[in-house]
Length: 202
Image (tube, rainbow, N blue to C red; front, side, top):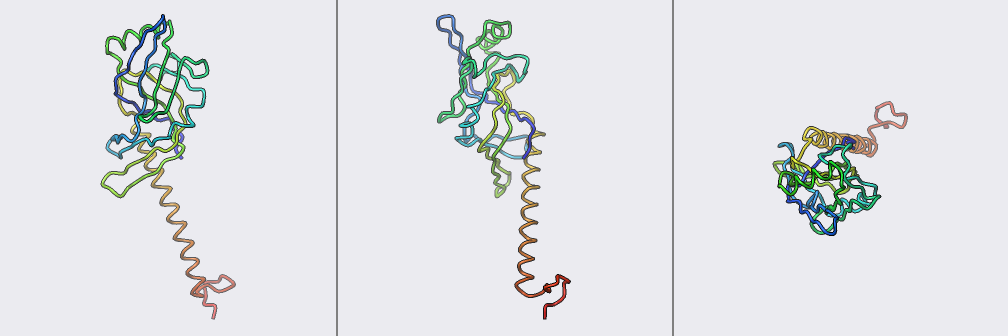
């Protein structure tokens, strides 16, 4: 299984709410069952339930995936994550910091309009029966969510390595299966002698 961190984004509008001096950004970092092209290598979708366990961890909200620009955290309650029928819903209570104030202004102006997330896949399936392979992400490890200025699917090189790794795993399984089948067939036909010298047992 590939261990590199991948990033995916959702271009849906980020909503902003201000109530009683509390500023909250609301949006979806991911939407379920939406096929997206990954660099022309394959298509990808996220299955419902993929985030169910992942959101139980201590997750941070960042700006543009920059680990030095934290704007929320689930442990402190300033970041709230929920998997619903649409996808991964994100609520961030924006801090009164330089980054937080700048982010709020940029969202109000419409300069930042997307959310994203960083993750590692822990369970996936591939369908190569069509012209283009389709990857379904069934489970993942969620590392962070981000407000992003460039909401687009990223890291197509890392994603291609996921496809290559999956194909290599299939080849290994196929070769192992073929070897076991050949061995069983040889024994059934009595081609291999009890001493294993490759001569007829007769």
